[in-house]
Image 1 (tube, rainbow, N blue to C red):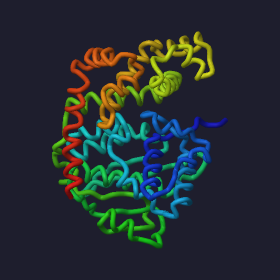
Image 2: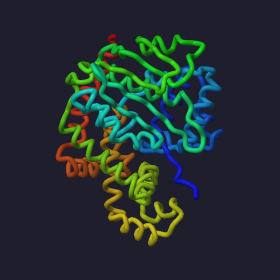
Image 3: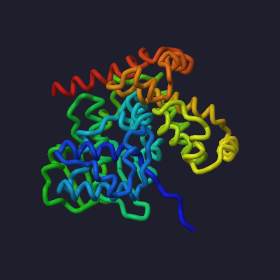
Length: 349
């Protein structure tokens, strides 16, 4: 009997495209060649089959000629790339708490991901495993996860964090320069796992961006997403369709059912079996996407209202205040204030 196809967050794919474009390469044809719908890049909760992701990494290496392209994630990725999980990380009181959230929600980031946080004498070890589905995962995916973790530490602390040691479960590459420049610490190749060793005082130090209220809010949404992802397949699939259709206006039940290749009656019955109605799912999807879109500074409130399928922006403002007790503009200021400050400090370094 075949097993269910494992998927990974499209955030990784968006970062690969950005890394290629930053190198002056055109990534537009890459998705078509691999049979991946380009529309997944604009879906905040888009998913890509794990094996397709592995093939994407391999093609990225081929067209760039750069075996260390996974390390480029340190320059292209921010916590917000992973929507609700990223925002929960940003709100954490310490790096240790932030990585604890990654461990808790890692299935959202990738069903084939295996991040382990362990306590060692004097330091914490973060080990990164990426398991293939039917195709063995490539080292670039583990490089990327490790580079992103280090970038997160540096971004959140506004410091040039140097790990105590970085290890890699692969032979030493011919060109060490990308690794020495990024990690700036002792390196060990041929190890049992990709891992970072980080000092305990660094991991346990308070973060200026800590916001317990927002962390709790984002934890709730991440927990809800994970629960649906694991136990409510029809709800999860319908939510993905809603995410795609909302920018075209408020989706009707018939449109969602058609996209899922089932009748309206079947969709309604299957959702009811999973304990939710179509209208409740639409409301929850809008509410969660609103938080994700507000974390993108380039989007105006009017544009966000349109992306959520509201014909009149005032309806969005009223709905958001009903959901969270404050206007969307005020929420955005609370979430992005620390982010803007951290970005300014990064640019000055």
